[in-house]
Amino acid sequence: MRRRERCGAVTGRIPAFLAVPALLAVAFLVLPLAGLLLRAPWRDAPRLLADPAVGAALRLSLLTATAATVLCLVLGIPLAWVLARPALRGRAALRAVVTVPLVLPPVVGGVALFTVLGRNGVAGRPLYEATGFAFPFTTAGVVLAEAFVALPFLVLSVEGALRAADRRYEEAAATLGATPWRVFRRVTLPLVAPGVAAGAVLCWARALGEFGATITFAGNFPGRTQTMPLAVYQALEGADPRAAVLLSVLLLAVSVAVLALLRDRWVSRL
Amino acid sequence: MIDAHVVVRRHGWTLDLPLTVASGEVVALLGPNGAGKTTALRALAGLVTLDGGHLAIEGEVVTHVPPARRGVGMVFQDHLLFPHLSALENVAFGPRARGARSREARATARAWLDRVGVGEYASARPRTLSGGQAQRVALARALATDPRLLLLDEPLAALDARTRLTVRSDLRRHLGGYAGAAVLVTHDPLDAMVLADRIVVLEHGTVVQAGSPPEVARRPRTEYVARLVGLNLCRGTGHGHGVDLDGGGTLVAGGTAFGPVYAAFRPSAVAVYRERPAGSPRNVWPGRVTAVEPHGDAVRLQVDGPPAVLADCTPAAVAELDLEPGSPVWVSVKAAEVEVYPA
Image 1 (cartoon, rainbow over the protein chains, first blue to last red):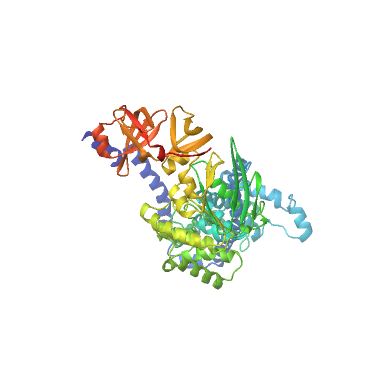
Image 2 (image 1 turned 90 degrees about the vertical axis):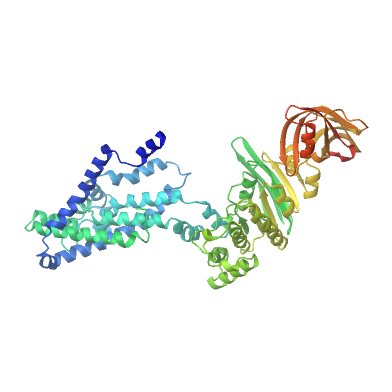
């Protein structure tokens, strides 16, 4: 009897010293979002949203976040595959390198990109001299900046999925005569598809919200490099802070809509 | 046919297996866990690199050829059917990988599924299949690539006892109809006896015995094999009808033998008494019961010796003689029941 009571105490009620901070945490997460919705200038919304600059920023944000995600998929899945190999030497070091953009202030990432790909950068100068093209202050630069900060999300997610997958399926495929490319495409990728999808969504969300690296590396030019977060920042600093709130709500709506659309299909593990 | 010498070294352990298998022949690698059976099979498939030796399939040396181009089919222990593909797509995977057109590969796959008796599950996902069905699909998948060498890793181990029976006899039929060489790994002597034309027994990475199933069953050469086939095994030196056992004691056999020999006899041929038996059985010695266990509808006694033996009695006899661990007994074996063969 006594034992049962003790079990009940452990499994049934949440102790106050955990319940109170947990509730505070929920409030801390939810209240600012509620504030956004409450203070948004709904009456002026049609006029504010009709501004062509808003449409341009939204389009640019969706375009660059998607392009950055594609870039991360193309580069990140192979990297995750290499990282997931148990026999790889120096894996710990490589993993640390991959994780750096996660902990690095994005502004520093932007500066770092500048030193490499700027017009006078290590790789940027030969590129500029050869082609006349330089990444900074271009839409392509935005994509690079976003991909830089978002790549770790994809790599770590896919690596986790690869590690959890039973790699003997690949051996089975090999004995059936499949080339490495076929094994990868027809067996490995489908096995880790949920992990890839989850990673891609995280990656896309991170890219969509990217601010620091973008403004540092690509600047803030409407129509070219001004993504939604940058437009929000500019509105808040400039003439119409109410527009900033409305743009924030719009960005929130887009993120939530995409997550909700994908969640049931692929991202149940998120 | 295949001609192989598989040498794989791991820390403190070496697998050294010379193996030839004729076309149409089924060889079972039998051995305890950790004997190197699965490693040998994976080496034949090319999934483990040989540290020495060679492999030739139908005269073509494929020692360093990657698994995809060896022309080897493998049935894995837990089947490893691709979970994201249907049974049909699983079987079609091999032909597709070998360059067949989609329609052609699916037709081949369908024919194989029908042939192994799971045609109606063509569109089923592997996780919805029972163990027996999955095993058949895995067999079809391996055979659909038309391999010159078929490898089966514990093909029946994942199945429950009842399914095992039917799948075993079906597998026997399919192996009978298969024209290439087949190697199967098992730790179950019954699987080996039923499925194989020849048994190779591996212990600690080394071949300790090879022969036809009846030969292995009647004349085991190691304690492990003797236990598997349920025989008492003693080693000794023969001089005429008598065998001086290495572990002490003497056995008299029906035939004659000279030099180093093995002597084997069934536990059911061993009689147990409380008093020294009268009459003239020639093999009589005292011992002490060390264990009493049910064994089928008999009771199996372990009696120390020398020689130590297993003896099967009826439960009634055990009760009547009041046998329990520690009971002193007399043991006898008829000379005619002792099979003696050169070591």
